[in-house]
Amino acid sequence: MQSEPGLHPTTHLRLFLSQRAAAPGKSVSLRVEGTDAGSMIRGKVLGFDEQRDGDWRHVGWMIGSHWWPAGEAGWFAMTLEGYQGNAPLSFEVPPVSPGEYRIRVDLARSGDEPVAERTATMYGYLRVLTGDRP
Image (cartoon, rainbow, N blue to C red; front, top):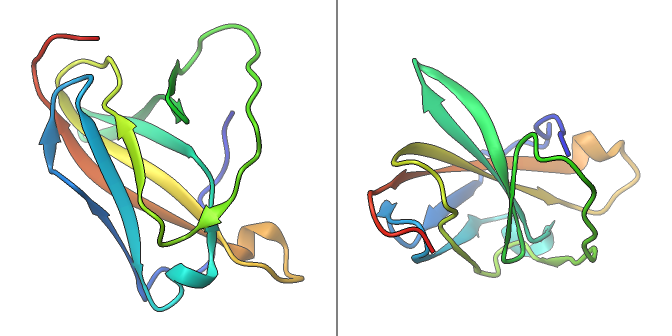
């Protein structure tokens, strides 16, 4: 599953994480606030990118409560669910190596424009700490 970042302006949107650092298996929540947040819809899919040598590398997806590492073979099924854009989304930190990660969430508004023009891509930053993996 790969997609390009949305083109909808994020000037009046802000993504907040409940904490800046956490160990694998710990619960973190995110929420989007701002003028447009309540009128937009988000799903339950979060993208995770790891920072290496100054670049961001995609490492996997958190889909609901399931961690799906990048490059893992096979198919998966999920229900398509939409939540109000400003509703909190809780997730467990996935079993990844300690380091800096960028978490991606996409929100969309309804309309007749192409979906890329109606989608806002937001990023939050999380330091994954050393800890027992679940």
